[in-house]
Image 1 (cartoon, rainbow, N blue to C red):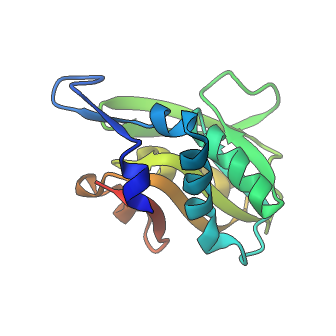
Image 2 (cartoon, rainbow, N blue to C red):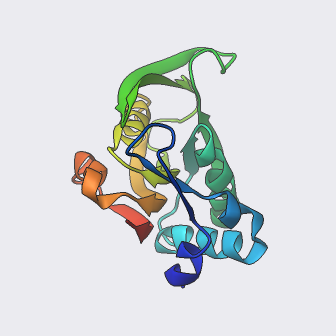
Length: 172
């Protein structure tokens, strides 16, 4: 099954910078069977984990996060870039493969003890996911799991999230 999904991920060399191979998931997103399969493979390990809230980071985390929240009968909470959320927020700075940024979450988005599944399309160096985890922790959410479609294993991002395991459907 991952072979079918891998065929729907397009490699774009030297994007957004020379030397980077961008894993473009837009062909997968437009393929109804591929999108459904990706969501199923991302959510299946967490179906019996009593997830209350699925959290996804801007922007591709929204795509998969809402699909997984629906599959788990859970709520969805977005993590956004600065200035995009209207109410009081918590913020975390983080490093990317090729820069740095900040993420924010509404201060009341997660209640203490709620079980949270973190979702994104890809984990590379782990900066986005680590900042997202720290935001969940700052609201006293209980991190029940982490799932991504793609893991760029050579960049070591999943190791930054230990002792939590990152479930990835495709590894490069």
